[in-house]
Length: 372
Image (cartoon, rainbow, N blue to C red; front, side):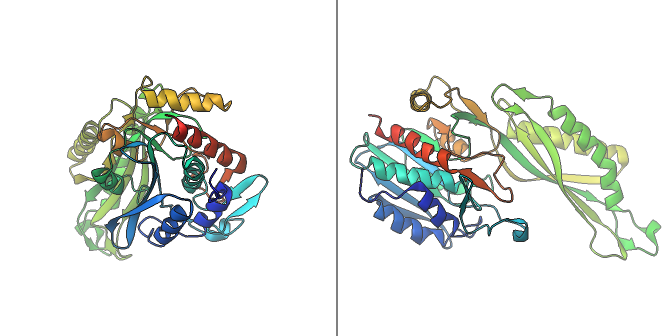
């Protein structure tokens, strides 16, 4: 084992202490560069935008046999007064490490860093670790930029799977529906058409659509879903609102497509608008497809064998959210999602990862890195 090895728990504390909310990951780059080099990794940075960089560490020569990849960004902590301890100060208590990103996904990053340091000089072929920016938006823009330069033979994506081998993840569309009325002074409301009232008439159809979508079920990923998550209408107290915006979070399971889901939603909205004699338009804010790796792929067998060898559950599962896996699969790279922590903790107040599971993740990653 390299003398440069630093325990994952210490690394995680350092990572949590550097706020890296999506879009503002810049402060994390110099830390990662320094730590990667301290751990004995050949280190590169890839500029992606403003002061934001993907940071890549590797050991060994030749083509990258296996790339471990996870993200630098975290979601905002929201109301920090609701946290038992400051969200950007790691606190260890009751066998857990608390802090924003502990589960999603700085725990994976810390475990991958220790594993790569432990594998230095012993890894099978060339292996790498990539810490990318802006995963939380779902665009995978900078993971795709990473893959313009690097072509790993296989990849493991670090996300909170409870150390289960996830071989599929849900896709999503994030549409915005704008309902149009006509503005007027609120003292003469009949001169206008209230867009909020019209949007209210659309809501039952969107709820019925969500129930219908919820009956679609995938053996690994569970049920598809559609949920109304944002409504905004009106600008001033004394003006009949001219527009009302409704946003949905629509999750896709295997065999569903972005185009198919968007087309179906547009049909629902336009049909209801025509019936109610108002105008409504659907715009797509972001989207990514569901993705999967076949259970017969050698990588899947290797990951399951590594888990079984450590006495952990080895049956492949699905990952209920989105992640950068789809960017790798779009390039034909066999990919598994695997990391410490629970999705029940992701984006939550008092987010945490179990210390024992964090260390177990190091052992799993190391086994994968050492395979010939």
